[in-house]
Length: 310
Image (cartoon, one colour):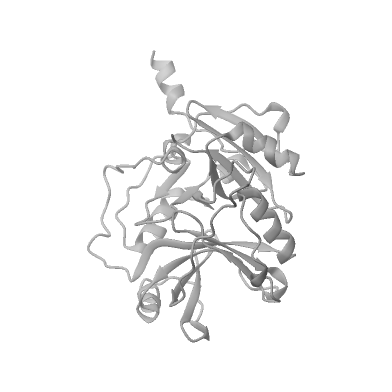
């Protein structure tokens, strides 16, 4: 019985490791991964306090960025995956194509050609109603590197900062409100237009927990070194949550997964994507109610397709 209890606590790497796929055996899913995949709430007992510090940065992820080389090709691909209409008016020569999705967190396809070679590729953006205050807050906390505030046009301001693992993030104040792009009535896609969780690769879990919690002024708890703590959820006020993930570091993998899209039917989702010429990157894994697989988009970005709680 004791041995079985230990096995139940073991975590799993959420993808098949590329370094040794022939010998790969699925492990247990970390509890925090189930939080977003299954739509539950993590109590996070033993939290320590950033509650007395009010961050001007909202713990809300407005959009994730996907860096692409061909904007039209990627817009067509992601529209096909989620059964969305292709918005031709957003393919007008600009460098981004944006989609607000169900749940309050959207996708921004960002054309790489507009970025300087040394420009960090932003993973996602947090919201703020006080861009100056947000900048002063991070500067006072000693966050480095912290890039200057940019104001590309009236009603939009943002700045970038980098976490200790080199993940580039953005804080944005915007007057623009985008409507959710609804799925086509006749779509065959079983994949919903909703992001179930955003993965953020880290190498030192407790350092990452402290950093990202303090940026948002959130309470947090530090975790032990075991593989059952290989994913930690940063709970958002609304929209999609962020999952700090050190599985790639633990496994020595040379890829990362950006986020998960949810579906009520994993098997039909795989069949749909394969019928549309999308090969599976890592095969379906099943862990009780939870099932998932991954694919690559046209630029090699790895996206997870994960079951949704009923």
